[in-house]
Image (cartoon, rainbow, N blue to C red; front, side, top):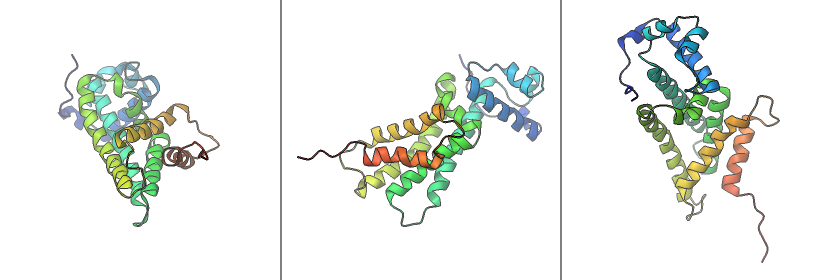
Length: 210
């Protein structure tokens, strides 16, 4: 049974730079290989440390992945919130949703491995870790619940639209970009976000004349 991700050990008070270096390396390896495909010895080797030295900073592999996932989700949330906050006060709900999507994709594609690890590894980690992470993820999704509800109240989304399904579809589409996007794409991250949100907000079918 997986050990419960409790409080950070006193051993984590070692040198801050070494601890951050380990987190950075772990995030990169978890993103590339997955949680199950990344033993602690590989993280230690990449950090030029002995495997046992990792325990000076982290109690376990579970604690290490938990911190990486927390940072990743928080990075996505902060990026989306910052993007929305930069809009003028009179912005439409459509502009808010597009800005949120841009911030989400920026965190996934332009801000390192933490965010991508939070998307790619959630289902691989022990249940105790998932229980903690889902609460953080729900806090972020609460923002989308409110943004979508506001749009529906203003008449910018049809009243009959199921907002839960819409929210899950939007976030799934944004997260999926991580699997096909490569640097040098002909479209920018912001353009991709605008196109994706256009699919949801405008549809893709032509109106058929009676």
